[in-house]
Image 1 (cartoon, rainbow, N blue to C red):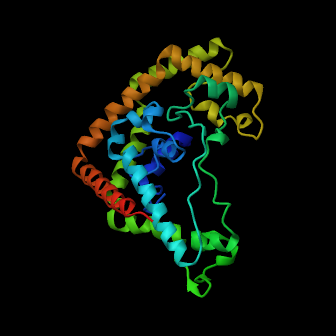
Image 2 (tube, rainbow, N blue to C red; image 1 turned 30 degrees about the vertical axis):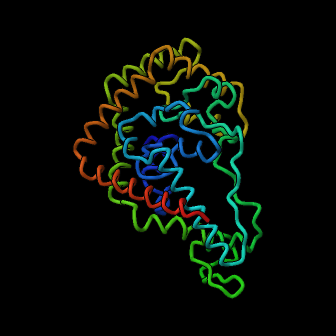
Image 3 (cartoon, rainbow, N blue to C red; image 1 turned 90 degrees about the vertical axis):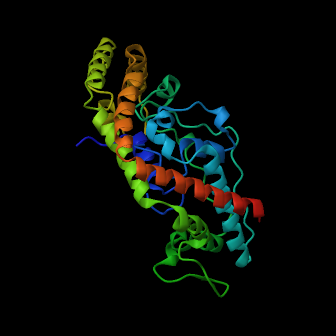
Length: 310
């Protein structure tokens, strides 16, 4: 069985709700959770106007994800609730400041799409575009309060106490996330959206136009001296999975992106998957509209918390 691409896995995570705080777990769909690529950019100080929509953003199922503004409101509310909880333990907590200029990872739903990223990284992920760092400004004890049982080896399975007070099982941050998630997250709707987003990608691989595009891409790659049947094949090459990025990997990745551009494969693939998603969405309209409504209610509740402040 072919593995899911990193982009597909990230999108599926967004649909399932882990980043929005549901507790379930940047790429097979992005409708159920909060931290879309746009939300990550916002957390780093970027805005929607500063980044171009990716294929993932433009897919029909993306309508059922949190908007940029909703994500920002929910994240801000979670930080306020976390700060309040930490204060009850006598711990001063401020969210880490965004890191200016942190790059946003290029779109990889359909494999590599950025010539610059291919020339620099080959098929390796961009470590500089990873999620914001852990809260290393907190002491070890404070991290236990922040994360609860996930905060370190000392937590074990027992309840954690700090200065005589019992710490929430999932820590102040987990409690803050759960405060909104338990009331507003729509797990059933998120599951529908996630299934549509992941199934549509798999189904797109069998689309006649996509398969024809793969053939033309493969022919283009042969012209550069590389023999691959589909754009997913280089991802499975063991030589490209080590720590080092070889010249061969960079050359292959560069040819990969160039051939996608010359054959128009990315647009062909996106259009095919969009058709598949629109059909699936039509058959699940009620569940998805309930999900969209739950997102709006959660964002409204988050804005109220933000308005009340610290």
